[in-house]
Length: 101
Image (cartoon, rainbow, N blue to C red; front, side, top):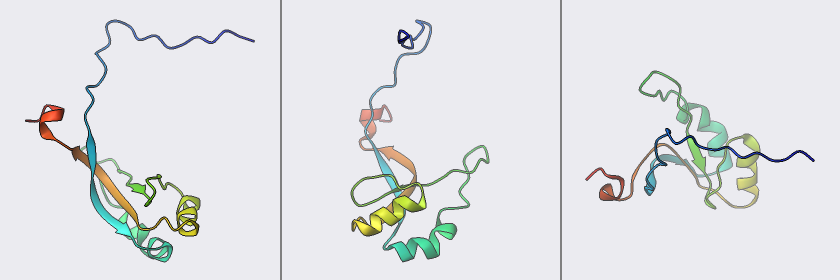
């Protein structure tokens, strides 16, 4: 069995990110699987980043699980995990915590 080599961070790299609690800026929600089927294409498209790139929404079910593909939304329906909320950006929970004071 080959020896496992771990990634070593060079000393010249910047320090690790300072911990900061972020909360989603919720943009909306799907109340049911049918709501997602009928309106996802309209609600989850057309958002662009500062460089003009397409930004994908982050969808989270009522149990806190990411929903990325149709099977995730089907599972949420079967397990009673709707509504599924979505967002594109986060904000600091406390401005002073993230150095934005």
